Length: 156
Image (cartoon, rainbow, N blue to C red):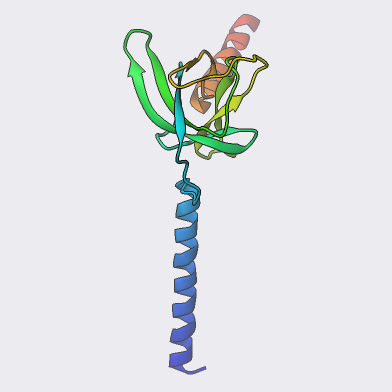
């Protein structure tokens, strides 16, 4: 194999690697081709949002139904207030449950909506009162270690 052919193959695999990295960056960055044009805004309050980010997906039954519009801290209740832009094609009952989940084992976090059975629907400006905060791995490990230390203390 002469030098020119070898250089051509190296260039091909470098370009293929760069394309793969670009594809991975778009996947991880939650860029999607489908843009949500018409939305209504809901708000939910969480004790802990973990690593949730603005523009993070809002999913129901695994389908992206909206995006996180804004995250702010409420100094009166000491809670995180998350504003959600939901596509107008999807309506949810007033007793919808909002949880923060993690994609995969250590992936990005998203808001999951689980609809209830109420006949009344959420509208622009409504608040989702039933929420479940993000599970923080460090907190779980700390609780586990604390409980094990308490067990060993009780045995003495």
